[in-house]
Length: 318
Ligand code: NAD
Ligand code: UDP
Image 1 (tube, protein in one colour):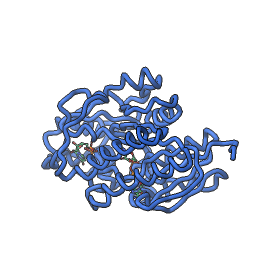
Image 2 (cartoon, protein in one colour; image 1 turned 90 degrees about the vertical axis):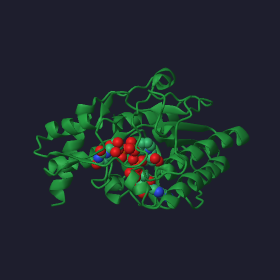
Image 3 (cartoon, protein in one colour; image 1 turned 45 degrees about the horizontal axis):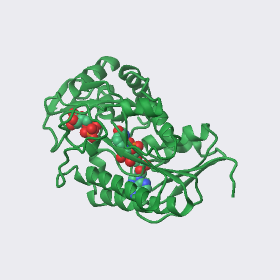
């Protein structure tokens, strides 16, 4: 059957990134199937889309097979914050591995193009800086982050093998730390934690000496990158880094958030979690050349928009 509009499946569509992706795909006249088990996602993230004619929500766990006639699949289902993916680590690895097998099986059956939301965590605690796609990484296979890191690495392997063995039309994107509105206030990741703490004038929980680095990308930039990759010519499969190469220490991030919120919060130093990567910064030359993509939103601007979002959230939930 020839469809007049693309039908796109977004797994993890009710999550932070997934909800922004669903919204943008609808704007681009796609029919969107949002699949989620609502482990970390929420109806509140997608409630504004519910009335749209071409939007459908399906409660389903990617660990179980799923059938639908679709043209494209964005496979995002997986908890992304350390506290959430460590809550049930066996489930996390099953979500990445069995979830990938089920979605690849679906893509094979209906001949859909499929994109995997992989992660900078495949580089582990990197010994190469910045990280290029050719770097194989430095990952602890038996640590508390392994359920996520190794699950995502195995998912990449599965994607490549389905491509080599069954000629599947695949894309792999390695996403670097992303922040923005609709992160869960208790998500546990650094940007949401610090903003919520600053807005409530509570201590800022800084792990370690704060000199570890991350490179933070605003969610709108990521969405443009994900769609550019999905629409890239067949045969260009990645993996490709999508992230913002502006690198900050976590201490700098804390100070910037205190300043932008005008908070009275004090920084409280706490122990660094096990296997916490020391530094992270994407090399995005490949994305610039192949996708003509680069991030546009500066950290300060993105943080201001995110702070405004959390202010509203906190006001509505008192
Ligand atoms: P999130 O936790 O907000 O979203 C994940 C979504 O997947 C949630 O809606 C959750 O309910 C759903 N989900 C989890 N397990 C599922 C399962 N078994 N079946 C169906 N749905 C399931 O996280 P996010 O930040 O939006 O991350 C989305 C994707 O992007 C993840 O795959 C994550 O690994 C990847 N990623 C995110 C970042 C980041 O900085 N946010 C960085 C790298 C990679
Ligand atoms: N972090 C912190 N305080 C927090 C949450 C996180 O200092 O309340 C640190 C964390 O130890 C890490 C960095 O911030 O060094 C980024 O953590 P996050 O969980 O956001 O992402 P990831 O470690 O997966 O990149």
